[in-house]
Image (cartoon, rainbow, N blue to C red; front, side):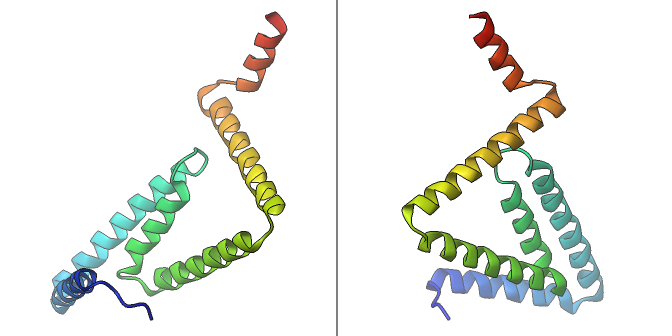
Amino acid sequence: MVEQEPGKRGLRQRVQTALEIIRANPTGRIALKIVVAVAGAVVVLVGLALIPLPGPGWLLVIAGLGVWAVEYHWARRLLTFTRRNVQAWTRWATAQSWPVRLLLGAVGLVFVSVVVWLSLKYSLGIDLVADVLHYLATH
């Protein structure tokens, strides 16, 4: 296990103590479950809405899982599974040669470009490819 800085260990302990105090009261336990469920749902839904757009969509979904993991065991297991697989992917990708890493980056860039193009085309009605082709044909 990795040693934590003293300030972080103190903060984690204070949060854990506050959660135990809240859970000790039946009303507090129910209120905590409701607050965690709603807050996690809001973060996950915002993250899901942002996935097609460039930005932190998946990061927000994982953050929402982290919020749910405070109170729900299934979310803790799913978060652990996600963390383990992201770390495995990162280790695998960084162990590859430069040409493979450049290919992975190029595939990622093409994927994001297609997602942005489709998002703009179908959500805002802006077809960048058609606009660029029209511009090139007329100038």
